[in-house]
Image (cartoon, rainbow, N blue to C red; front, side):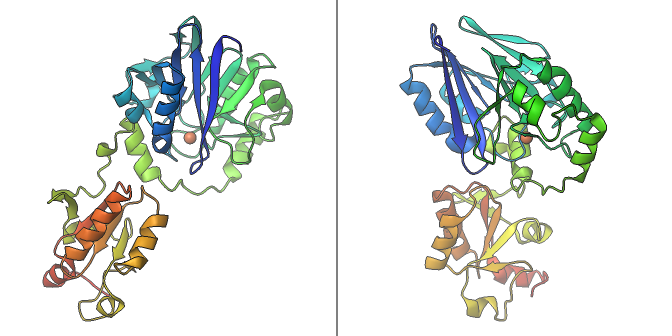
Length: 346
Ligand SMILES: [Fe+2]
């Protein structure tokens, strides 16, 4: 490892590992699976190390976090690369199985390892393999959405990854137990799902019996990642920008009841008074209560703010945007308009 640079970076919210690798001779670098929230940190590190970022590589289209690809690409000369099967039109390079990318004097080899999704890639570099969500430390990625398949994943792991030299260091996209890496030999022996020569049938049974919740940000992460991490692409509510504030109509909110978080910022008296409130609406009164709510919330959650006439909800939306929220909007005309249109209330 004398003539390369290697950094394993971590993003806490999604427990994602991002990897920065470089050829020391030429200072050419590649980043694997960057995350939107930590793109600034990565850029700073790249600058501090004097590296030239050449490639932003995605092991797959992530469902649990938004890629940092777009942020990194804006600020560097790097090209984005993902599997040709991932249908990401905005990637600069569409990778085929076995494709080799040169990084200065070194090479990165992309191998197709489908199963967690139909378009997963692993990257081999200098005795290491970056396996994304295909092979994890004593685990594997799930196979229940995005074209996942337990038989394909079994084959990818046992035929392709397990045929790499035993001492190959394995670096996955996630770890939820505080471990950082493993080796092919260790996983062949110890992986509870595919190790110790477990059969494809065993593996299928294990995978079928997993009862996993859908990733929280999936409805936002998938469209954003299919657009290389450009957040403008995610338009679930289609807000109009009025005086700089994203605004949605009463009808739009009515259509989205149950699918977005509705926050009513009025007082308790107003909330339970004659104008009523919208089904599923949560009362978070403007002021310290709202501030506290916003400080602790998920910046990627889709939220509509509601008030009596639309004024306080605009202020709440403005405040949320200032705090880094990406998908918040204000309902135009508030509950007054809602009542004028005879929309259902509680
Ligand atoms: Fe994944």
